[in-house]
Image 1: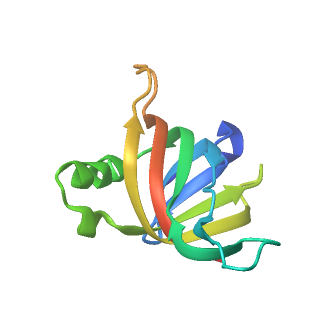
Image 2: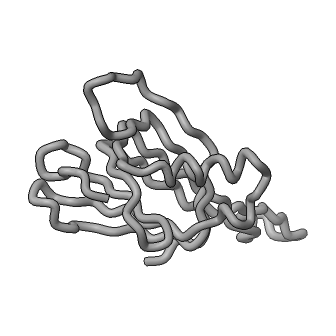
Length: 142
């Protein structure tokens, strides 16, 4: 992907399976959360035990994106066709500085697109625009 990140303001680059696919101006990283269960113990009235049960999947939201590829849309179309297993990909969100140098990276082993919002179309832009892309992510890698 050869988008001019330095001058465009698109600082969040999306990599899918190690390949750069798009750049976005906004990124909301997922809330990582563990579901818990409260367990009351007979005869113990001071507190309630809180036990971790399972992790919840998180959601990444990317806004105002540009890409020179149709790969993101094809990825989303796999989900629409019910092909969940082949559509489960590793995903990286890379934050770039104004010079296009990587400042931070968040990697996820399992991601699937769950919402695609198209933009207002303009005939003077060569790149494909994406208003919002939402992904469910599992297995965050530090």
